[in-house]
Image 1 (cartoon, rainbow, N blue to C red):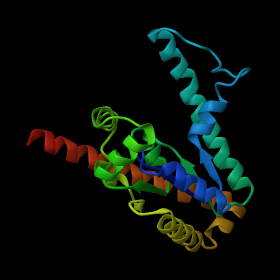
Image 2 (cartoon, one colour):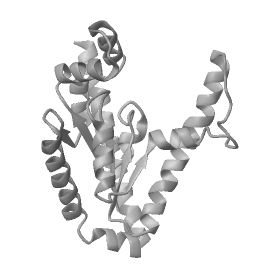
Image 3 (tube, one colour):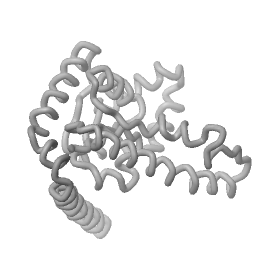
Length: 216
């Protein structure tokens, strides 16, 4: 089973793409939904913290719980015989999870469009919207981590067509390998291990590149 990591930046349209994928019956494991669920009453994260120390304690509870729930979501997709599933993770690249997926897919639009959409969406000033964008990794920098991008610079019809093409691409790429990995677990484990090893190589290469740039 192919595990695809879907990410983006604020106001790039990642949530819209995730919604369109669900409408096409693509299994989506949504980190935001899970994060809300793990802090519901009766769960280990259902505590309201008022100071910094307790907020850190909350994060220590919530983040591992979200990761476990996402892993279980992937396992359930595998048990159901799905050919692929999508992990919808806003901070996929900021954390270590991008190294663990088969493919990183970035929902992209140019920074100027991103700024305009954010101002329109939140009715915010240029200064406020720019400040929020500057608190994140620039969308153009995220392209360095992406195996594929879905360009959301145009309108709704254009985006729908691109999502259709993306889903068809996933179906062709998964082929019959999903059945082999489902029926023969060792094959799936070896395949996943090889992908993790390749991601680790990419991460080391990226770190070395950052080191060279820092020296320059």
